Image (cartoon, rainbow, N blue to C red):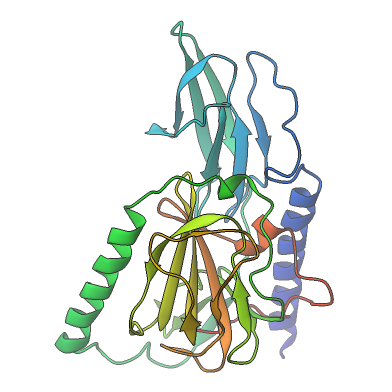
Length: 302
């Protein structure tokens, strides 16, 4: 590895560790009671950073809540969930409107992250055929329809658990650039394990998609909605053991690791999404599993 690449990798890991430490310093998402909230205050738990997820409690009497003008759903106890995608800007604005018309504004500063960017002196790839594009559109339509279901679940309140424990082979946010043309960034976390290794639900939720055939890229794809617009996707499975509409519990077996779809080896690709924002599972879960370390370079495994 060249010196410049090594320094960039050290900076990348340092940035991720800082975010994980910030998360660990706060109360678990749903694992402990919320801090007391003064009538005019927000209480926020979680990393205010790119790829981060935050669970909050709105000021007393809040009837309407918005983030950058978009409505945010409030649970009956006043709690809510928001997230910030990989390329989110440096600022966001929470606004709570009370029943008496008064408003509470909370300007948020979103910390930037350093991502592993790899420049390659090769073309991005071949032009997709019309047949592939037609097939891919049907797959993407099926994924979009699943995301639109929005079933009820309180899984978003839980401290998430690892769906499988193994070597982390790909980090969220890494990206390759092909002769100046950007490739898609890595949207999840890759965990290497042999084909057939059981995968468990990281939190309670409702199955919104259980592919009955391998998708072009994702292979056997399983999606679980945890409520409040938060969902998990599990890619490349060799087998899916649950069905659409099933209510799953944290730790319940849901499938087996595989390498279906576009994969170079057996692993689980686990991704998290809040609305249209892609989130970093490593930040939500609080760091690598026991006995595992982060890869020196965050190259994509897909």
